[in-house]
Length: 267
Ligand code: ADP
Image 1 (cartoon, protein in one colour):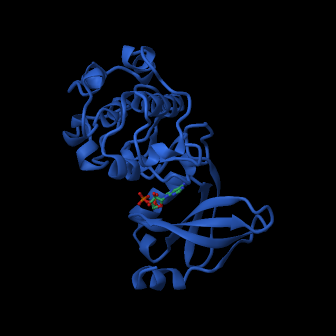
Image 2 (tube, rainbow, N blue to C red; image 1 turned 60 degrees about the vertical axis):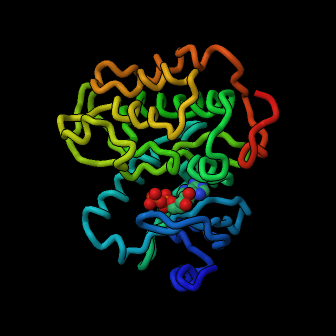
């Protein structure tokens, strides 16, 4: 542990108590730091089950806009249940911290995978894109736009199953034709209609998913459909799931863990 991390974690209890639900968790390994908090592997002391604990300092959440962001994240995330969305377990607080207990994604995110592998094979990309689309189709069916889809928010569980996470910028529509005008997201992945403040909807997520860092020829047509300037012309996830890139050719149903580090032997 670096001195800085040690200093930060000194204050976080080793045993975290959820007094309302009469549960406690032992704080284990440090997983990483985000914009607002720190994530640890935590163990339920009664069941021994391992969870990811997002721990947010109330000092950092002093601004009311940040508190609103966290309560919106919890409100939206706790309403979701899908095999390609990070599972939500519980949220509670003590005098110093807010704790969010989530399904543990042992293989981190597609950002770390990208850093290690740089490029992946076509069957691997079919596998990941298919599962990402299934997760996002579920969100859109619940009238939720994620608004921050990017490799760092696409997590991988112990079995390399995709889990979409981090609902800090997500919004829920009241009706299908609703629009939002807030400037939000991560610059490299933001849809043009968010930048121009003309009003954005589900198609902003489709744009973000079309931003790969390197492009294989076979995926080009799928991606150019996703990166159309007009949100109306961008296909829905339902249409994208039927695109020939995903339905023709080899799409594995699972991947070996070695894919985290090296390309599989056959394409
Ligand atoms: P932010 O919300 O600012 O993007 P997070 O608090 O979500 O940051 O994430 C902080 C760190 O914890 C990141 O390194 C992320 O990869 C890791 N992390 C977040 N959620 C999980 C999870 N469910 N399982 C494993 N690691 C996670």
